[in-house]
Image (cartoon, rainbow, N blue to C red):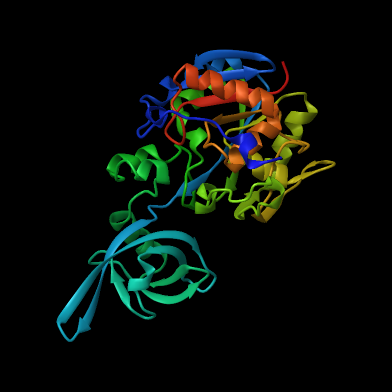
Amino acid sequence: MQLSDFDFDLPDDLIATRPVTPRGDARLLLAQGDDTRDLHVRDLVDVLHAGDRLVLNDTKVIPARLTGERRRESAQGVVQARIEVTLLEPRADGCWAALIKPLRKLKIAETVVFSPDLSASLAAVVDGQGVLRFNLTGDDFDAALAKAGAMPLPPYIAARRAADEADKRDYQTVWARHKGAVAAPTASLHLDRAMLDALAAKGVQFTYVTLHVGAGTFLPVKVDDIADHKMHAEWGHVSAQAAGEINATRAAGGRVIPVGTTALRLIESAATDGGVAPWEGPTDIFITPGFIFRVADGLMTNFHLPKSTLMMLVSALMGPARVRDIYAHAIAQKYRFFSYGDASLLLPKA
């Protein structure tokens, strides 16, 4: 298929820059088979059945965006430069891979100061990315990063406003546990504790898996034939307990519904002919139309960017023509799009 098959026109005013509060008041487009209904996230209690299982990604977003200053002695005196950093992933040697702007203004071994407590030196440059060695490690690093860093909002929000303290709450799931993501599993942002309790009382069950969402999730597809696209890799973990819970639900006839494309990609990575197996490692699974889903019976997800790999994923689940109709309906009804926007519940079977 061609990249143009996943394109659509989106009015700029439908891009959400703040979430709806309370979370359950966000709108929910229910697409079940050929039926389309306009609901709210709080209506999940009525839509889901006892015995259904929601699969939740418990990754925790780190405040990965840093602004610092580099100082350099010159013949004219001290020269300063503003340096912006987005942390991408930790390396085995304790350094961090990072996007650095402007990278050209930083030399190897030069130091960037982010706060009185936190600084880093440039250890290397690899494939256009910087490798930073921080002055702190462990809990000391986490504490300093929490003070100096900002949440790494997606580019389409960051272009409209700067991250602030509210984002440290809003851009994090209420069950976030394992630090390592630089982007949130945004469909999960709609669920608060009250909603989880109401669903549990209905008989809906929950399974937690971990996929550390990377900045690659925002990378554009640059090829015309999507078969030529190389998917970015992200680290994930499906525990033996999680695999057992999902398999038990399937055996009992319940539906397995990931909340977010990250959770879906992970459980399909862990799928075998005999069910879901415990799994750990990087996954670069690329789900496009024609993909055979072995685990997921549906998907709760937000509305995605035109020509993105996530549009390809939902088109694989529901069919390209059905997704075009769903998105046309969402635009006509003025649903809010992207990370802080409204949600959809996609159920292929009527």
